[in-house]
Length: 514
Image (tube, rainbow, N blue to C red; front, side):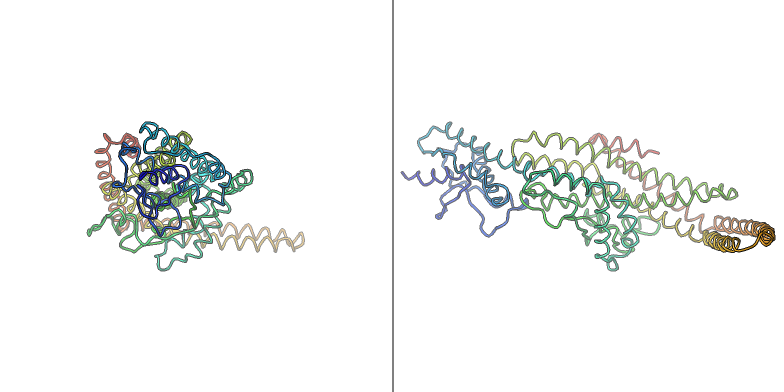
């Protein structure tokens, strides 16, 4: 008779997660003061009191864990009541409870525990994958946090680049949020998400682009990973801008306004911080690629100056090597790490039998992706950051160089367009004779202008040659080449030492060995 209250509490706990234990006699303890379920407190709300386990009934720690998880699953189902689960709860309440007794055979008790565990797990897993559409939420994260949606990135980078290159104390968060919202609205995937929400019967919407907001961290990635050195790492700054200060580009990330339960089981704060680290890593690499591509575009304008192309040979070569490095590292992260890992996870989601298996699958995806993207190894990331910073400082120096030499050419072109426009307007207001005379005068003026333009072109070439022959420019190119070579060699040496442990690193080494 003394075991009846304990066995009754076990029956109710397995049937619907009900815990009525005013005297604290049952094997399950509930932490009070937690009103909201989330992925972060999921493992701490309920715990096992091992001293209160009746070993004659519960014969192994494995069964203890099954009992704990069964009640947790039912409590998660109850927590979602009023959103999507009235029918589910009515089905549970209508089911006759099999009352467990102390004298029951331990094997039959284990069978009942297993049945209750599978039933509770299947209910919650079905809700998570069906009504709460967690796969759509993960797809939203992939598109925006892992930058799989290309048009969103291009639109946002074009509008917000000038603002994000400022120091953090000068960055306007309101303007950045406005540009982020505009980029999300212009994204093609937003229409797909809206259409899918119209066709789904889910009573709880998944995470959508409308839930995304901008977020700024107080630390850069190298500070988070514990990379701190006193000596300079590049010609003018530390990796990721430590000398100049933290900029918006280094601290910018995405965040969700709220991640509701039970979606937060997968997208917990800890997992969301991992996605944010991946976003910052990819976003900053994309920014450096954009800067190097702008240098490449400026280089194309120099092709008409045949006299200086040979002098720019070293510059073109260094720029191409840096662009090759950044683009191939991006290719490695996006198409050899994230995409294969994502496909592998997506194919296994529907094969999971419990919510905890689904959570473990998602955690494994994040851990593997972070590791393959070099975010779990401080030494590798330090070498990568130094190489990236060298590419950025080179692009900044080249931007200043091209701004200086293009001033004369831009002023000539602007004045010429204005003069030709006014001449066309005057031409149509004249008689035939006046037009012929004016046409002759215009030919002479055009010839004189051509001669003047040729002379200015020569002077412009001379200015470029003088700048290229300057010892300061020569020293800048030579210094960036040396630093880039040293940093790349250091990174390749560390990567090759990891090839035996990570097969994907071998692909990265092949791509970067230019």
